[in-house]
Image 1 (cartoon, rainbow, N blue to C red):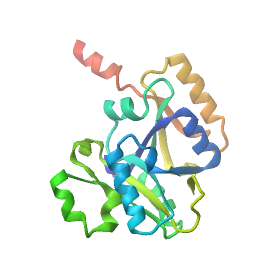
Image 2 (cartoon, rainbow, N blue to C red; image 1 turned 135 degrees about the vertical axis):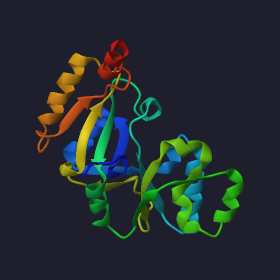
Image 3 (cartoon, rainbow, N blue to C red; image 1 turned 30 degrees about the vertical axis):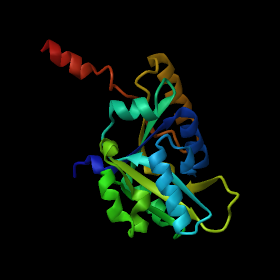
Amino acid sequence: MKKTETDFLRRYTSLPQLLQILQTESLTLLDPKNWDDKNDSALIEKYCKKKKLKKVFALCFAESSETYHHWKVYAEGAAGVCIEFNKDRLLKAFRAQKKDLRFGSLKYVKVDQLSSYQTKISEWPFIKRLPYEGEKEFRIIYEERADATCSSYSLPISIESIHRVYLSPWIYRDCSNAVRKTIQNLPKCSELEVYKTSLVDNKRWKDALEA
């Protein structure tokens, strides 16, 4: 059966964070208060207070094929990476964790629609302003009910849940080869597919221009 875009979740991040994921076999959920979108973090904070939680930690993915926007905003520069996860395997790892873990696709709403969500508190972590609709975000949150001092939540995953890794479109070819070898020399990573994305320099596109 042919795979579709919805069979994957993509995490745009940096090479150091990728190495941490591969070495620890875990994802790190962080406090949304540091997000660039303060509208989004404000809603999570309000949700936390309404639910009387100590903390809420989150991690975001994209449910779409790669875009220039995702690279430029979330993984800019030569050290950017896109981790493509097998969605079924990753969600299986999520479901195996504590009941305080929640995840799902985001809904994008207009400001004047926000009032209709006032009584739908459980949906707050999964709504966002309409201008962000193109991001097609999938989010996972962990609700901390006891420890107010913790600064993150570590979620175990398997290396097998990673389908492939794309290296930055702005990394030099020689450097990308070295990074690929470094990644594949890590434990359990010898068969991991690692490619330099051709997003900004695609040979097939340029060949087609000459056809």
